Image (cartoon, rainbow, N blue to C red; front, side, top):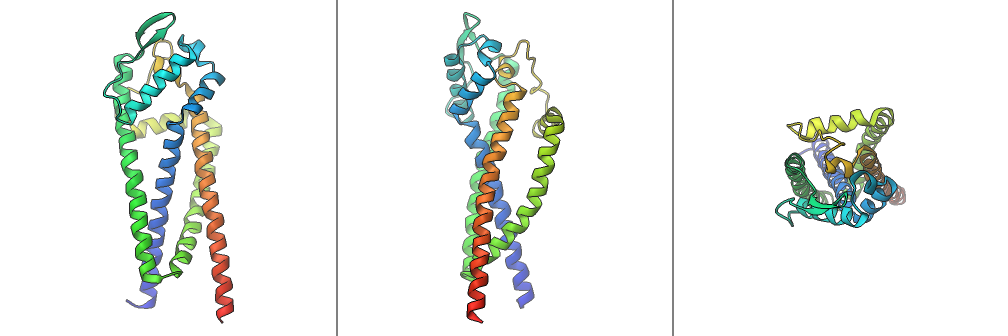
Length: 238
């Protein structure tokens, strides 16, 4: 393999590794927010979800905990009882339960994809270290900053679209993620959508993007530091 082909190959490996890393970080950001009970507690109070659902804060949190256990495959069903408007009843109807089956499948895919992404990222890093030694870190840094520049543009476009019409963006996600219309729930009768109305999802997406963006920014700083150190070593070695 000549030098040009070698550079192209290692560059391609670097780009692939970065894409895998970013995928893993994005899914991890989603999981961190999705399973943060303190976040639900704050949002329920902020949006006065007790008033809209007829459930106490404690019953809301207990229901949410069981709902998240279902998504994590620690619970087999969603036959959850709670006091709603003063009467004990099953919280979710069949349509809501059927929709959560689809949501669970999506989370299960996310769990698997996260570890696959991190796993293959690790393997590629090891391969690059074997091929290039310490120079692999420079390759990864350049690849990361290159990919990040593209993601930054997409990131800004997404934020602009969300600020213009979050409902359209959120509905678009559902049309892509689900093959049926079970996600279209009635806010007058369905407690699931009363628990997590659109303002809740807006705050959720913003929090996810904030965590994800912070992680990307930290890696960008580390990449820049790595390149500056590499450039200084090259000048000294000349």
